[in-house]
Length: 542
Image (cartoon, rainbow, N blue to C red; front, side, top):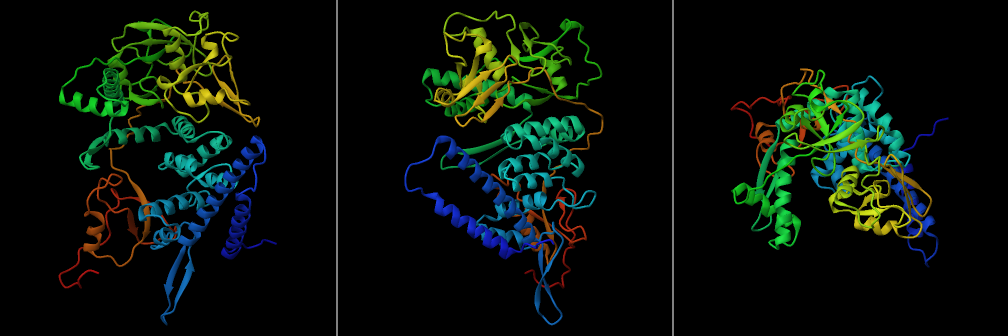
């Protein structure tokens, strides 16, 4: 017989859990091992994840309750289908959780998408129910779930469900940026047109905005095409490093701000060189691009630290002929003027840059410049799990301490100073494999593996001629329509000063008449308001 769980049962369980955790919160004396406290930390995080999933379920049920006025004036509560959002639901969440209005709206919308995933084929299906289930099982936290959900914002429900299913095995081991990268790679295989359309729209919306920040300073916020931003950043960073060296600025971030204004004002000149890796298997002059078009988007790495980025094929062809032909095998570096530089072999599975002949190995403790460049290009960032410090700021660590371990690409890895020191603490162990994957073991015996930058296997988003005309898309939480005047509409949608988080003064909630499907997501750019201007004889608004 099924047992119905009501809010009082949830309330009682939550209070009991709080009391038990409070009682265990302050141990009377120092006790327990490192492994035991690490296990306790992990279990507490699982409790948080499960509680967050339960909170999402509570928000969904709270939002589905609508007041109804009977003929005799009595007000009763009616329960709509899960996914329906009552007009005052965000306000109630805001008060209950002490959130701002904007935060509460986002919280409700996120809860509806995850915890109100309808049956397959129904209008309320989102395909994100697997994220909610993983959170309920204590395997996925709210932040990482939001990363995946945001990436699948515009994906059809069946595509979203397929991606979430493919990510399930990684929920317990990978951080947000890596899950984001996996989602995009899966979308590139499953629905490349969807990812390409996102890129086209995002590039069409590039802009630079300015507003007054702290007293005496302005704040800028800009989005730019990736290839243009990479070149601009290289110029800014190079000049900033020179400013720090010369003592003009004491911090590199402050130096970058000065470098930007100097470059824009024309007070400095600098040459920029873009370097990228290409697969070889034939002389560069004989490489055929197959059916790839100049308007295709291709994924490249090494132009900037961190994530791979998408750039138009036309840009690669312009900065270096035959810049990124498809294929497997070795990788060769070419500069912006197409002069070949050093050739580097790539591992066929991981795409890691290798030194197969050991030509760069040295007997000394310090590696040579060529070996340093190879290892930093191979790793891209700190190789500790979850760390994303760029390789340029990392130490080169001998995985097996020198002189027992050689100074070679097969024994060097990029580690930021903090994780370099952690590796040297008792109980930590790292093993660098031939394919340049690095396996870590912590003092409790748990293993994690990090991967090098894949310089070989690129995602290509072909131009199929199906790109829609760029439109501004900004899905928002939708609530049922109610008494609404023209003046009220304009106050919400068109007035008010811009803010950094809301540069365009538009309403954060769209209104619609409820349908049988419950709550919907809509686009303010494609769904005009349904109210007509009031006639002169109408009563004053409000």
